[in-house]
Length: 201
Image (cartoon, rainbow, N blue to C red; front, top):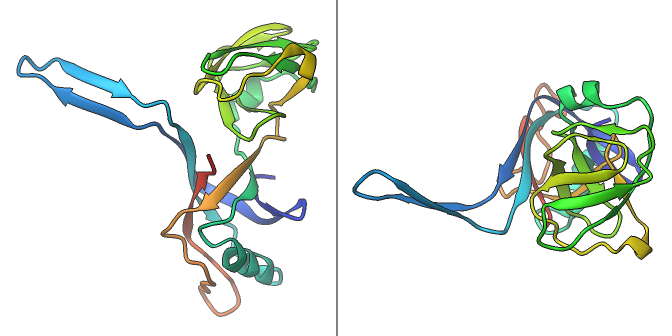
């Protein structure tokens, strides 16, 4: 269930509309001949804009979470997967092992028996917190293109596993415009409206 987690359980569910955005700074300028020069930085993070399901009897959990985490402490959310990718993926649930070199956009998977990972799937590796996006389809073992470039080297002998279904948890922070308090819409429903979360990188 996509939403904000605390103590291993969801305390606030995401509801539509939800936007997942890649913040990857680009510096661009147009020349007099109108050709464009653009350079993309290495840094990248995911940002989520979403509404939360209004709460009544359990509103205190989210209220305390907002006060406790504020803008400085990372917390866990379940990363929303692309609906089309969810429909296309295999029904089997292998947890493949991954290897790759920091700075590359290719990882090698083993143990992906009968697993079909469609492009557009969010993935995470067990040795670091960064969330990646599958940029190619992968059926069984072999190479998988990812975005952004791998931040940490993963050696074969270290048995680094990869999650890729509805088990991709992201560490994030509340953005600075989120109210660290409670907002009630009619006296009994705590409704925070739209909030923004940024990946803790």
